[in-house]
Image 1 (cartoon, helix red, strand yellow):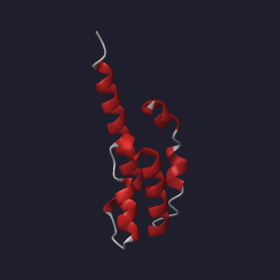
Image 2 (cartoon, one colour):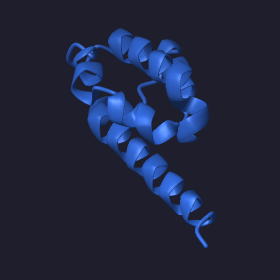
Image 3 (cartoon, one colour):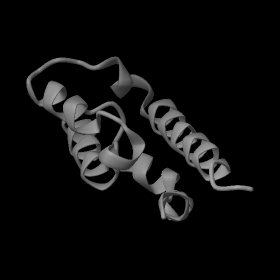
Image 4 (tube, one colour):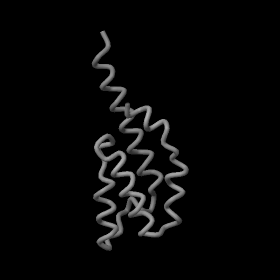
Length: 88
C-alpha cells in the first residue's frame, strides 16, 4: 500500500544522499526515487535525472527536499481522497 510505503520512507536519509548541491548526486537520487515511486507518486523523478545527466540544471535540484515532500503530500492526499470513494 502506497501510504504505508511512504510512511516507511526515511526522507532525511534519502535527502542526505544528495551530498550538497552536486548534480551527479542529484541525478543518482532522482533516478532511485523514480525507480521506487514514479508510478505511484505520479512524479517525474526519472525525467529529472535524465535532464541532470544531459547537463540541464532542473530547478528541483536546488530544493529537492521541497520537491520530495510536496510529491509525497500529493500522493497521500490523493490516496485519502480515493479511499473516501469506498465509504458508504
